Amino acid sequence: MALHETKDVRAQDADTDVFTSTLSGQILPKYKIPEDHSPTEVVYELLRNELLLDGNAAQNLATFCTTWSDEGVHRLMNVCLDKNMIDKDEYPQTAEIESRCVNILADLWNAPAGTTAAGCSTTGSSEAAMLGGLALKWRWRARRRAEGLPTDRPNLVCGPVQICWEKFARYFDVELRQVPIEAGATGLQAHQLAQYVDENTIGVVAILGVTYTCDYEPVAEIAAELDRIQAEHGWDVPIHVDGASGGFVAPFLHPDVVWDFRLERVASVNTSGHKYGLAPLGVGWIVWRTADLLPADLVFNVDYLGGDMPTFALNFSRPGGEIIAQYYLFLRLGRAGYRRVQEACAETAQYLARQIADMGPFTLLYDGQGALPAVSYKLTDPDATPFNLYDLSDRLRMRGWQVPSYPLPADRDDTVIQRVLVRHGVTRDQMALLATDLRAAVEHLTATPPPAPAAAPRSGFHH
Ligand SMILES: *Cc1c(COP(=O)(O)O)cnc(C)c1O
Image (cartoon, rainbow, N blue to C red; front, side, top):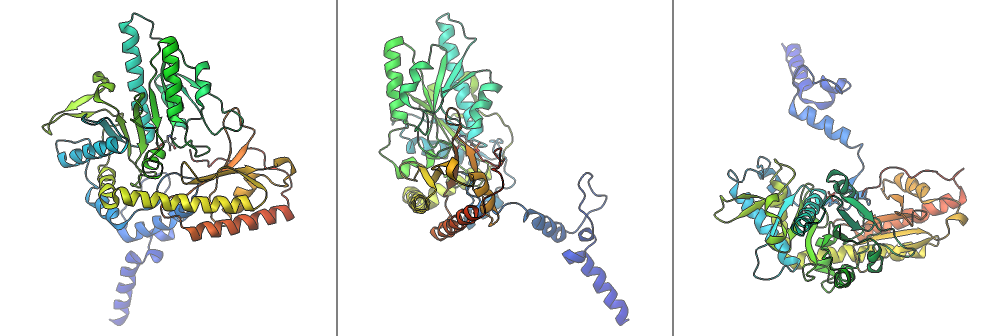
């Protein structure tokens, strides 16, 4: 009897103790769905263990995306797990909250008073960029048609853009005119435009927080130059601001930088809610200055809210939770909260920049002041340094830090740089530890130089 009981207990344990379970004694199926089911706890623990092989998000200094979330976000995400934001009939309140977020962003970006904002949520800035680009293309084409002019060669002018704009250009058949970076510059400069803009230019993309260097492009100067070009040639070229990161930083840290709808030429702005907007992954935003800038035939109107709910998206079904979490964060933090968060990040980035500047071999490209809370730097004299930045990235990775090295885009592609993003949740102490590890890595690589310089850039650069 006693024996029998023990056996029962053991059999039961085998079902619930993760590491003596049947599934745990096997290599997990990789190509076929298993024949039978397994207990929740066992599968959960086994997968959680496997995921430990992923990089540690808190040490990922490569990504712009938030790795911070609070308890309220987790709880609301749980509540919203079954909400599909596209079903505006079933989830009218989620749709209403999306609309509030659009209006809040339009206000944050100084849209003209007394107008109703047009805009929507997206899966991220990439989808928002597609929508912004499409609106530019549609409006240019309508204008050209009305004038009886050809519409077969649209182009989009930009500086060192994120890959999403290259995708937009290819997917939607627009020539991408990428202006090379000049020596010493961190992005597109106004004086370069005249050479690239013409009657077929559907718009200019200005980036608020260049992916490579983290600096802002001078949107006001770009707008002034486009005013001048219009006066000279008659071409009225709108600006789309890619504020993937900066759209949530500049309004709080740099209210005097004029980059948004205060400039009449800025037709639309996108941002990633899941970057400095602090929402969980999977939400972006696009807002047009006024509703008329969004061509009616791109928009599908949904009227069940009593008002007018324009929807314009590439995707259909999408989770509603990120949108609710975004609104939660607006309410939870308020302007003052966002300002404190971004200020703390900027101060931490500037602290790290000072440490890096003091180490000796590095020259800062961007010191964390005036644009994104981030630092970018290069080797002052790569030829006289016994290691390169790829070696340094590898060395830091041994301590778990993910710090990407990559070449700048053309024409500065002979310059390799490293970039650290400071996001909410990255502490001063952590950056002090990183600085200590950087110093140790430099010392080690100087004392024991790698045999030959690592040749090609590694993958792992997160745009
Ligand atoms: C991150 C980023 C994007 C892409 O945004 P996702 O939200 O990842 O789709 C586009 N442009 C810039 C400048 C970015 O930093």
